[in-house]
Structure formats: C-alpha cells, structure tokens
Image (tube, rainbow, N blue to C red; front, side):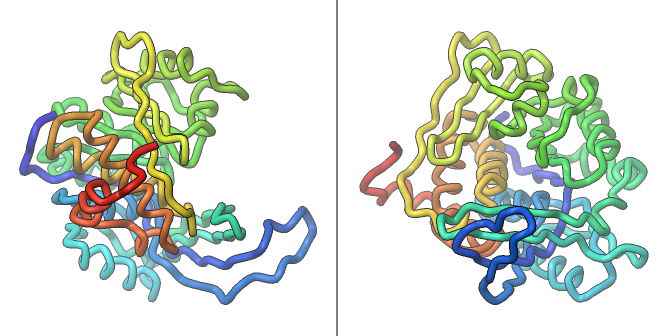
Length: 314
C-alpha cells in the first residue's frame, strides 16, 4: 500500500460509554462503590475511525445509532472529526449502543456492551454501501456488528481490490472463508487464542498459523506495554515493535487507537513497520488520558511525542 488520497472506510459500532471508577473490580455477588458516572463517546468502530481521522486519514463510516440523544451526540462527534457519516443510519426500533465500563485503580477495565442499533448493520446495509467500499484506500472492520455484515464487506472489498484490515474484537471464532479475504489481521492475545481455539499462545508458531489463514499473510499481535509483534509472509520469526514507557490512566480505547492510527499511517506511507511504530506511540499517548475517544491523539501530537519522548521506545 502506498500514499493514497482515497478514504479509509470503517464499518463498525458506535456506542456511548458509561464509565465509573473503583479501587478494585468487585467479586461475583459483591457491590463496590464507584465514582460519579461519566458518559464518553466510544464503540470500536467509531474509536478506530476517530483514531484514523486524527492520524491524518480521510475517513468515511458505515454504521447505525438510535433515534435518541446518545445517537445525535455521537454522530455530531464524528462529524467534528471530519468523518463522513452519510451512511450512519438513525434507527427508530433500537436504542444507541451502550458500553458499561468499570475502571480500577491501575487503569485496567472491564466492559459489557449492549449493541442496540449496531445489531442492525446487516449484510444488506453493507451491500448498499458497496460504492463507498470500492472507492476506498482501505477497509477497516471489527466484530461489534453482525459477522454476516463483516463477511459481506470483505467480499465486496476483495472483488474491488481494496485492502482489508480486520481487528476481530470482541474475540470469537470466525469462519475460514471470512478470514481468507483479510489482508492484515490485528489481534491481542485473547483474540488470537479465540481464532485458533487454543488456551495458550506461542507467538512464533501461532502467528504463522494465523497468517496462513488470511489472504495477506500479515498478522500483528498487540501486547500492551510489551509492544507488538508482526508476522509477514515467509518470515522465520516475528518482528518486534517496541512500546513507550508511560503512566497508564485508562487503557480503554488503546487497542482501537493502535488499529486506527496504523491504518492511517499505512495508507499514507505503505510501510507496515513504520505504521506499526507510529501506532504504538499513538496507543501509548492514549492510555495517559481518560476515556476512549477523548484520549485519542492527533497526528501532530503523536509525531511530537515520538520526537520528544526522552525514554523512547523500550
């Protein structure tokens, strides 16, 4: 992939995140006192679209919100990031998607998602957006919308020669024909184990196994503070992308920031290693701030962070 003025098309979820903080996560059956409730724009699809837009890409979005206050606010938020939302439908039969998020003192999170209108992003709706997909530099997908819609989008992109990036989150097994159309697969350890049906991960072996199942044979394993690993076609061992040392405040949205920033940089540069390093810096900046979309940095902030970071990658 080389520099391209065409847009990144994101098909995915749009949620309002309802967030509270606790000292520690409650045990089963236990009640814990939380902080005041915060409402923050989120959803994996929307987060990744915002991350790509702030990282410099032209972005268009296919999704759905409810005909409610959350939906109106979230759609306006995407528009403020110059994201094309003409294919974001307002659905009267479903509420806007909501994520219930609990943060502990270490900045770790537990999340429950109620999909709402996201469940209406069907294969038929994706087919209606086929002209947008065909004109894209890259198609970016996750799994908070129906898998049938994801499969349909990949098929359309494949026939049009549009590269696809899939972040299979939340983690679940996927049919081989869906994976077979993917060019770049971005997973964390939980997602990789779900795709492989394993309870342990050997990165050197298992990244190669995952790569053999997708068209582009490129898999990126994100590992939080341990950085990321990239497996290319015919590579004997994964390439390591180093992480930046930062103080984590809230890890919500860090993975989405990595995926969106990488997609933008990949379209801009065509260099996967360079794009992954840029995305690693973006994710590091993200965890130093509260909230999903509010914490996503701009391209200028990411480049300044890389330049000025005294510790550098570690």
